[in-house]
Length: 295
Image (cartoon, rainbow, N blue to C red):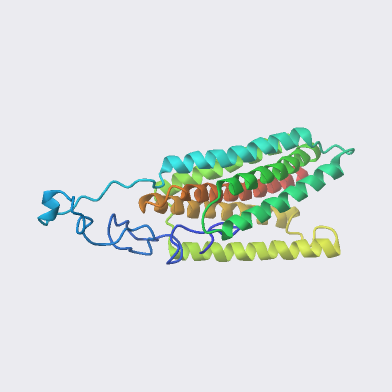
């Protein structure tokens, strides 16, 4: 199972053939084509049914039964709203209840780091589970919100008061822009696109990890990838990567709906979209912080 998220691995809708159904058409009631794990198999559904309609028994083309308990776009929207709503709610609560003034900054940062580690563990556990767990996904969202709330409060307090609102608006703009471009067909998600994005993300994360190690053991900003001109460049690259992962997420959702994925898979779609939006927000916040600091 391959990942379409820059931070954590998670299952795609096509489990048997790489990423979900690139350039394949859904086959209702037909054999699995292009790695569709939800196709129901070929053959007459009335072949062994003694209660089948007379025309079906006489060899007339059968009518495929109406699918039930399958994922719809409404399911994805509802689950995503719940997951993002949890992130926003806990972020607001942590902003209010965990002030980053000099008297409490150490405690607040400690809680934020702990919440981030818990969120990472929960996300990894969900990524390796065979089935989505709504409780696990919402718990991840809650702890992620605590981390984001403290970090956002610190940036707003020590860098610029309006930078958090700008980062939120920027994240929404990226989401809306990518969705519009995807629906218009300007972004075509193919295997080549997927491979390029994943390779770029792996390189990006590797450079960030090396920079962090240099910062920890050498002090300062490590190799300078998080500040100054290089920081701005890598911030833009991070946002572009996040936009590419949004396109992959949209492709997964579209394939899941078209192929009749189980309704529970909508939780995975919400989980993936939340991970990607958190990535974009953090990169946007860091980029705007660097730009504000240079003013």
